[in-house]
Amino acid sequence: MIDPTRSAEPCGVCGGDGRLHNAWGQIATCPACHGSGRRAEDRGFHDVTKTKPSHHQPTNRAKVVEKQTWPTTPQGAALASDVRASSLDDATKARITREIIDHESTHGQCTKTFVKKIRKQFRPAAAP
Ligand SMILES: [Zn+2]
Image (cartoon, rainbow, N blue to C red; front, side, top):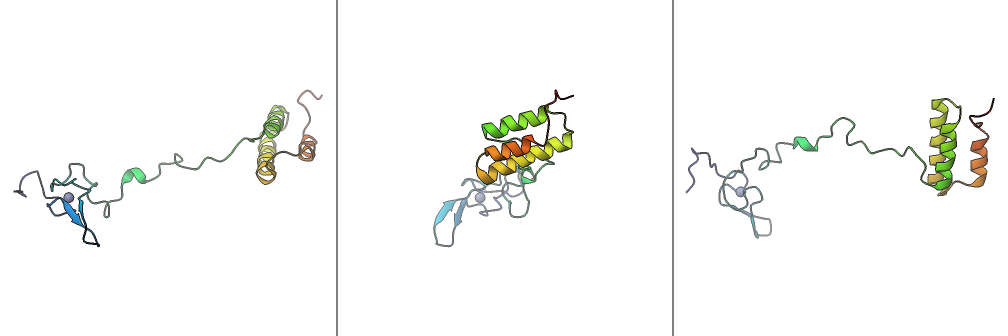
C-alpha cells in the first residue's frame, strides 16, 4: 500500500504498479522504479521527457571534436617537424602544417613532389 503523503511517492512513470504496458500489449518492468512502484530518489531520472539531463549539455570546449593538428604519415610528420624547426613565423608554420595534413587526407600520403614543393617554402633555421 502506497501512502502518497509519505516520502515514498508512487512512481511517476508507471503510476505505482512497477510495470509498463507497451504498444504491443507486452508488460515490461518500469525502467524508472525498476518495478518497485515508488518514485526514484534521484530527481530528473524518472521524467527525462520534461527535464533535459544537464550532463548531456556540452561544457565549453570540452566536447568539441578535436581537429587534427599534426600529420599522420611519417613523411608528413618529418616535414612538419622541419617546418616547426624553421625560422618561419608561427602563422606560416601553421598554414604549411595544415597544408600537409590536407594533402595527406587527399592523397593518403605525402608525395615526393609535394614534399619538395613544401620544402621550397622554407629554409633551414641555420641559414644566415
Ligand atoms: Zn515505475
